[in-house]
Image (cartoon, rainbow, N blue to C red; front, side, top):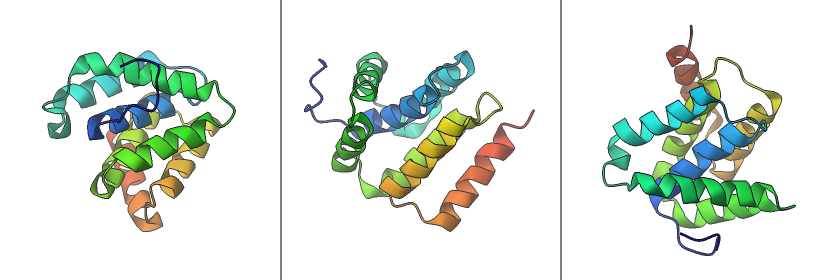
Length: 140
């Protein structure tokens, strides 16, 4: 994949992009967050046929978009176009897990999670349940 963001994304690419976006939202991609992304890709059935070499170009696409003025809107446009609705809650759950992985939620991460809920049309009650599960999994 090149830096051409017009290329079609797979479902898995979209899920990776959401996780990377949450991790990068506070300006610091922590080791714990990277490990969470890698373990999700390695362990979850949705990634069974995913080429892990795609993580780097998808991540670079997210970073490139974050440098643009309307990059977040562009990212959500790409994700809405490529991600089937039935995976919206999966994307939100993965985003919550990455955000919670380091034990703290920065303001930028909270804002991006709110934006993801809105952009992916996640019902508020479902979002609360997903958030509660992420919090429970990452208590230390």
